[in-house]
Length: 503
View 1 (cartoon, rainbow, N blue to C red):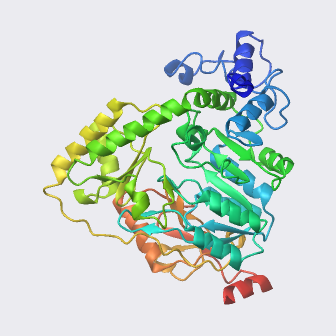
View 2: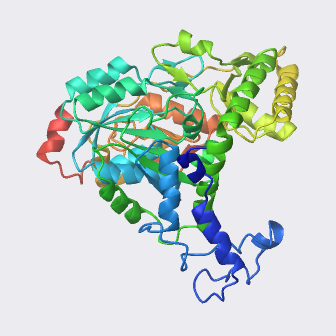
View 3: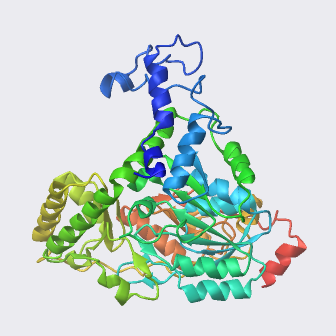
């Protein structure tokens, strides 16, 4: 093995944590359970050892925000494994990573080119940083009711029309595994001296298999946030922030990272990143090869079920403008042929077959295949969907169709301005034409239906009411029947805001 391969066998932080616990220290520091001496139902019902490893930051375990020893070494190993120059361990998930990136890379009034189908964390990043979005529209599949990637030509057009933009943001991949041409977008952005920021919440597996789409770091993007917990074996809430190249000031990234994160990071999350990185380096290729085989098997058997259609590699050709590449470990399952909404199937298969899907949308459900998936899991999914088909397919009654919410509202002021402006609560049905002061989104996948600074339309209200009526989860700041809007009577309009409203 090469030297770097030998190094990847190490788990410096995990080893240090285990050594600390086995040394049986007498704890006069936090946390208050004192390494499990104060027993709760958490340890009674899950494991008596779970609290033993919940140490804070004692001597020997380093400091996440000023790492010098074992955390620093673990982060360097992760950076090498992902072909990055720097890595930070985010214990606040990729949401925390995105906020860190926006705060460190963008200043107030900086423009950033980004898709409108970004996650809520990106909108919050705009609010925190004060950056101004230049939205580009993703390609919409109305039959599936999902947003795909943005065409490369649309990114380039936005760059040319906004040469002053500081950054370009790319989702790699979308929640449903759809990728843009990240390499070409990065080349074009760098030609214009723009930095490339990526959201890889659903792309951690790209770093460990050449059979999957290209990762941000191999595409020479500048900075990305990667959910190692979603696809690569770390504990929930554990992610990487990766950087590469001279366009990123890593000191500023670390500074923002410390500002936005807990001063008491959970060591189990840090240890899980250390362990997951090692496992994926050594077993990831084999595990992901098996994932792709299981996905192929799943498509073959699920597509025999009446009323079910699972999207495969042909989708890349059929939707070439909005699908440069696709992660085939994500099963996009259309259930339109059953006469049911995806929400119905999502809840029904859990209740009847004890199968937990990733999400249910209007026309599809999503099943994720990961390193822990087995053939038995796929067979159970077949049985569960077949049972629903047997019950519903022949007697299906077409549901009243709703047009997928692809016509996003017009933005009249930047998100920070919309968020900070004086606001008031109004009834949903009385809000048409007002300017939103809050984010409203369907979750999952967490793509906002409207954000602060956008005009509320009748189509938006119909969509929100549809989600409520059909059991979709709508997340918003205000109560169900209300929405927070800018109080125009109390709003102080600056010259900049007046100009933006005129435009």
